[in-house]
Length: 578
Image (cartoon, rainbow, N blue to C red; front, side, top):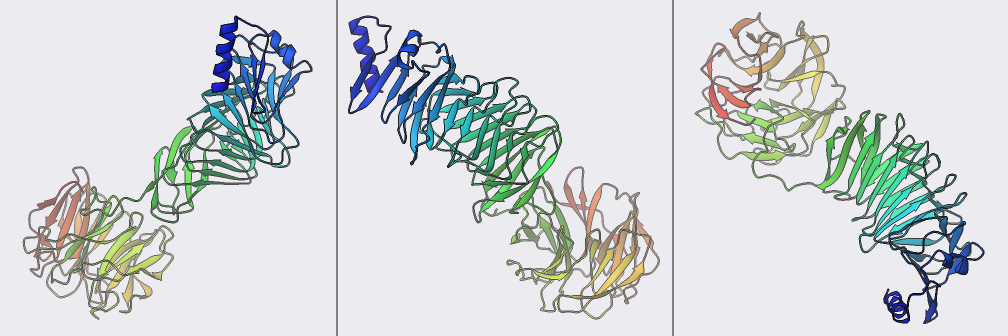
């Protein structure tokens, strides 16, 4: 740009000139067009050619050519066009069909609308380098940026936060950018707009957006981005807004790949779910906001993950680093249960999953309050239903069972207050079932399971002592609308009992017979509407099973210490914010 500034100074010294003047230095040329008449002088046949190193400087008084004019970039030439922020018509840019290597076409505050039947920029091997704010608008019957053989690629870059607005003229209905691949690099900011039935960005294969770069694709009626096997590879920011009643991203297949800290924002008038893939191998998680949501069984750590965008909404997806494991539980808790004794101190314990999906063990104490230390023993439990039936695999340590969204039953072998062992599949087909960790129902000193199916039938699964369970045995029915809890030995007869809460909050005890079946119910309390319960452990070590109750309104956790014979002491607050 020193060459241009120097030339302008020379013009000022020599007086005001209206004719274009050509200066040369090191075989490069600076062409100044400073009046409308200069277009006919330097583009007499409707075109002018820029060779390697040339600069075309369009003065603020140059106006627009009176007829269609093409700025031709010579083969493999690095050239610059300075526009001075004036909107011009009848002007377009075209790479040479003889390109054999990548070259740079720098546009500096250039704003043009192409003549009829022309693209604003016909790309072969050129890389658009952006300086300032630039505008490329299409004619009535063509793309604004059209790639050609053999590469069919559009590459846009900026090292100085340059911007580019690409649009199709009202009513054209064409693809605004038409290519096989589109790359937005450096810190370029590109906005693409399509009107009528046009697509903002048509690429057969891939759109790539670098870290620090951004792409906004908006269509009033058509698709924002369309392709065949479409891949959007986003390391920066991609904002997509589709037209009425069409998918904003459309292809035979559509995959959105995201790098660390990338953001993808989609506004849609047509509800659609897309596959999102993490580019980093590990250490990241999805942050989904607005109306977007993860579709089960996908979770924040899934890759690929299915993320849905409902009709007439906006949602955002960000790939962010997984935070370091917390040293204390992240409230509120997602779910909790009681364990017979995870830590091996002879007292029942409480297991709870925090808001980040970490599993914590809260030791019991002789007072019924939580003991110390509170230990983090697992991760990835956000979408798992947990149960703590006791020692399932006969190794002398209490274990954890969990059901995932696919209905798979997993065993996490206990290791005291340390990290749980790697999980092992011990069952499947548990979708729609409610799992109740029952303890030893049959008196064989092996932990058993109870479960309620969708019909309200109650089944027992006798533990084999090796982490697996026998065939189900029906032991009751009519449990639809009830919450059921294993309660340990409530009446002191040495047999495991259960508690049930009906839809109006009445609490009943079902005394165990020692063979997996139960006596008739006995009412043990009421007023349990609005509470989440956990039972099955002797939390204070007095030989009597206790209950935990979470007030779902105040998020306060209470302990109800057992008195024997299904009677409980008044509640004591033991935690808040749950």
